[in-house]
Length: 125
Image (tube, rainbow, N blue to C red; front, side, top):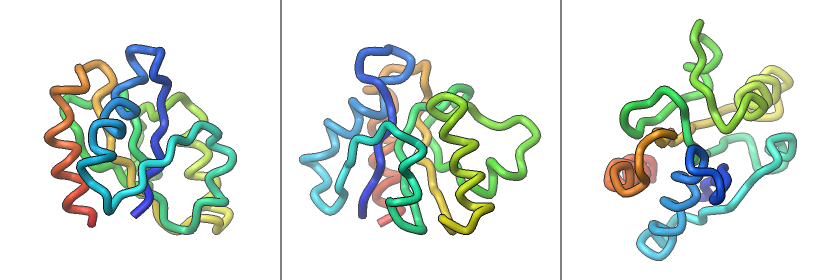
């Protein structure tokens, strides 16, 4: 399984996903954690995407589906504005069929989220 990892290790509010991927990389060899920054290149990653990203507004890690983003009147904030809208546009254009975001609370320390993220990834395998 390939998980695209968004985030900026230098920005405190946007670094949790990157730090978690580094911690879990050796622990979960069945998952390829791929650092990813350019949302506009997502269409080249296949029809079903798995993304690890910091999400503003979460209290604890959880899965966020593309359908949830599409239907939400109050969308969550994923890695800046562009990722969410790029995912929705790619779906509408038929370039992707499904995207699952493993959302990490942007305002919590990485160590608090690590066990829940590991559990969620194991559920996806």
